[in-house]
Length: 411
Image (cartoon, rainbow, N blue to C red; front, side, top):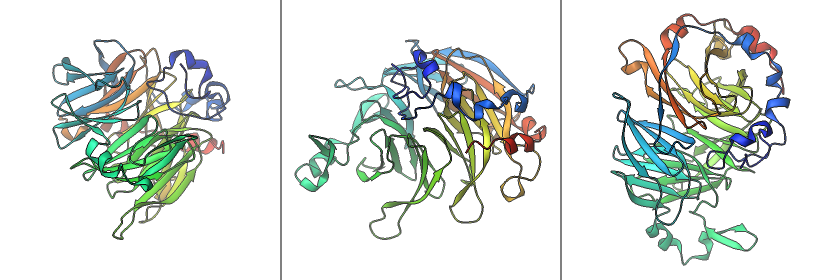
């Protein structure tokens, strides 16, 4: 089963529904994307500062749909199963079935709460909470449903002849993140929902986009960013009144098609977005407010950008349908926002046989004695590769990226 659209027709045979993004783009990335007209290898700088140290596989050898790291354990979702690996010994520690008895929803996102709970977002519209690998709760909880069951105003229309409680997602839960005790989930049902982590009560539901929402990111000051199949990135802030509901404060449109992935810098001043158009766009804050402006098209992949994460030092890593992992950072020069260097590609990591669906930082430079960052990449080939990246050396030997970003003006 392919993408929920023609996001990448040429690779549809490699794509299955459990990892797909919802997209309505009619363009073929591999052939028609404006960024693909660039000779990206001309702007790619190969250094001896990164390598693959090992390859892992889950017991069921299924497509890797998402990765997460917590307490020196790597959690890998493949199909309905979650397998954890000890990052010291690189050996599997436990596997458990990431579903309840009522469903076989594929896992699309993993997060952690209060150090002892694992949250999983599923294709079957549910969020599940686990403790010691046993199912603790399913969101929305039964208590939350019963509280709202009898009041007609708690129901919303989800189809021609179907109504549901507003606290329920009506399609795949495509992304999830936590911040300050709140759980933020987004779905192909076009909504952003906010849940309270202490009792898992749904506090708010926002119709965030005109099409499926594929990605969510939250900055340290609580500003929420959502990316959608409608090609837009929207910015949400919580009000200061008693109700404290989220409202849209900005609408960012530069991608030519579906937005699949978002990643924020540590200070929240830089946002990178990737989509089915193959482009990665950098957005930066110019002043002290939360308004983001486009600082340039960073580059891209020869196909859809499927995942993005942040490393230390404003380095970012992306994975794509072209089977590569790419490192992005600021080059030398002062043509970027605030007189800083522009972003460009600093390295291409190759080795996967199919699209790279998920990335996670296994260990950061801040906890590494030799300045090496470890990154895990999960692919539709069923493999997890662990890469060592010498982040400090990449920064010290960064190239000038002025030419690369000047040329890309597809919009």
